[in-house]
Length: 483
Image 1 (cartoon, rainbow, N blue to C red):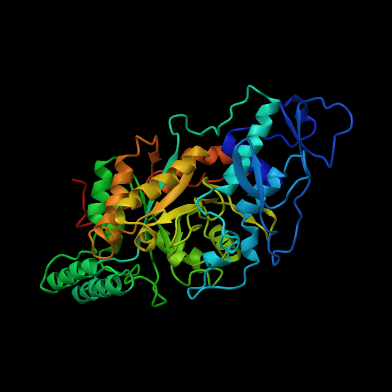
Image 2: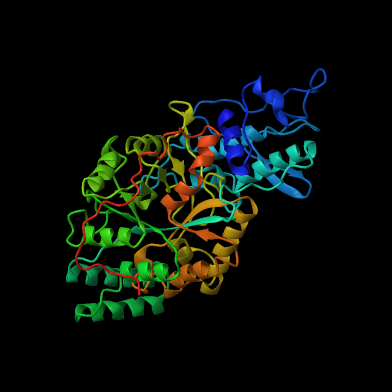
């Protein structure tokens, strides 16, 4: 429970004290007690029910039970006796550690844990509710009843930043041969007609393929325009590149692609982050992801995090692979086809390493939505903006954020998804000030908040200390610049 306690303190800005002697000076105590505590407590004391039960990772979590207090409801893994306080630290741990996912043996055709097999999917829970953050709110309210002067809301590590949002871009397509781009756009046209049931979009894309065949521009080559649009808005973002091509589901390029390192260098010089998009099979071998990070470092770049291609991972492989890669963060915890909070978290956190029973050495930045979830999700195009805006509003309600959004560069321009999908991204970014949001790259977010996680004992003092201050890059030809 130390992990859950420290994480709660990190999000709410408390100073955790676990030493019994030092605890004499604290404002409030949290204790585990099976009933009424014996004797008078020297400090106001919140007594949590001792309900969490350790189990094998191959055993599923207990089914959810409804809980309601003061007009707010949630679900609990463990129900307390009437009149007793739930085991809020146990609830937080169950969600954020994603312990239940380890018990899921079934995999989808890609090799992932499908949503339907997860705790949320099996029990038909609303994925748009950050259950771990809800548990933290209930815990904080219980503490505030004992210390009425305490601040009820989470305290951001940066006073001027009320809610952090991290825009990210997985580069699954890079311009190559003329024939390849014609093929990709024509394939997208067929998918739009048959899979997305949009004949209008399919016809537009077929026209783009014909124009490309006749020597026109590549409609999927959107990195320069995307970076320019973000630069004009003074927003940094994270771009994740695939470095190896071992599987047919990998991208159409690898690190040897002509012009690729020039494009990556141009992004870094403009203030964007360049990271690793772990290839489709990068977790199949223990050292492969670390080798991909090293291959980028060998070319003078400074990758500090990224995301798995196709979101193909299981936690037993993802966590040790990122630790071996010496990454500062990952942003893979999400779903490709729905909005929501996979670990019940609308905040960043070090994942829990069950093998060594400790917090991981990196931060997980939850992925709460991907562009293609708008294409296949319910609702008309006019509702897409409001769906994402509402998700951000929910996150903001429960804290200072640290969540990521994913728009592939090829999602802009209409060559893959509807123009409306790209428009949602720009509309969200342009309205960020109205929602009191701070949009920034993943590594800028890590730099802004890492001290908070270090202070509560979740990350070591050395976390991020070896990070280079400036990118080591030589001038490149053909650099694109912001207009």
